[in-house]
Image 1 (tube, helix red, strand yellow):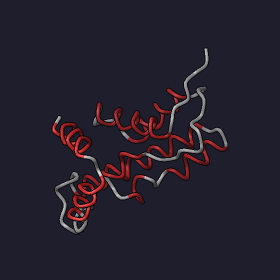
Image 2 (cartoon, rainbow, N blue to C red):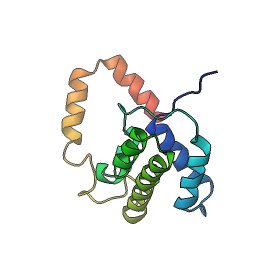
Image 3 (cartoon, helix red, strand yellow):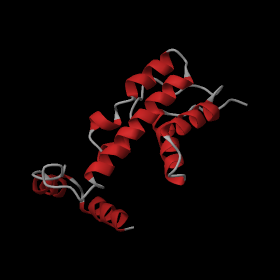
Image 4 (cartoon, rainbow, N blue to C red):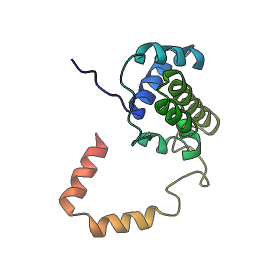
Amino acid sequence: MAQEQVSVADLFRWAQALSRENLRLSYKDIKERLVQEFQGKPFPPLYNLTIPEQDARAPEEDWSAGLSLVRRGIQFQDWGEIADGIVLSLEQTENYERERGPEGTRDKWHDRSHGIAEAEAKAIGKWMPEELMKLAERQTKK
């Protein structure tokens, strides 16, 4: 039976879940577990080196810090290198949140919607059909 290929985002989510489950787990331990868990499995694809949901948690330069290591690990087929990159991105994201606070509690300088919220609402209202707008509102209430 063929093994399922994981994406870089899947690896990051796996490391993030591991970190949240056991707060005393060090980044070194997370790296070791990642290598043990995925050793011998197919490598992630090179065409999609992103972690989309992380953009809302930290600036791109933080969450993408380890992606060059991940890319090199995939190219050289080295799970240790991939794990280094995933852990670096995880560490940078968690450090940013620890220093700045969770999304929505920052000052206006770090608020990504500051200055564009009015224009965004106008554009969405103009271009999004009313039934889609109601569906989106219901989904965000859940």
